[in-house]
Image 1: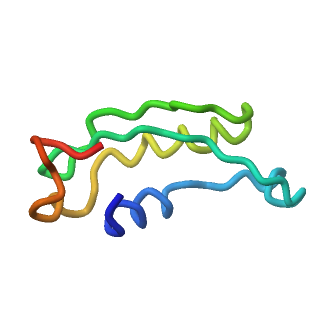
Image 2: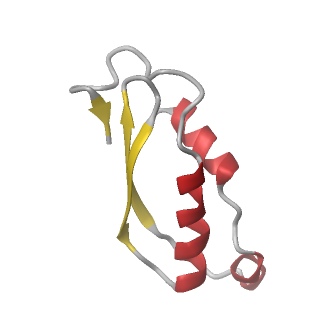
Length: 81
């Protein structure tokens, strides 16, 4: 994903302190659809890891919009996933 969108979602993510403190390596894979105007229209957890991590990532759903429209040429259709 382009840096502008990645930064926006990373800022919204509250990493679970209990997992970070253990040093465990975990990842939850999500699929996000961003419309050309920057609006987030879809958020799906594709590969869960554990309840704590998945819930922390799901909180990103609150970030419904990117700051700006998608950069020109990023969306091959009317959206970027």
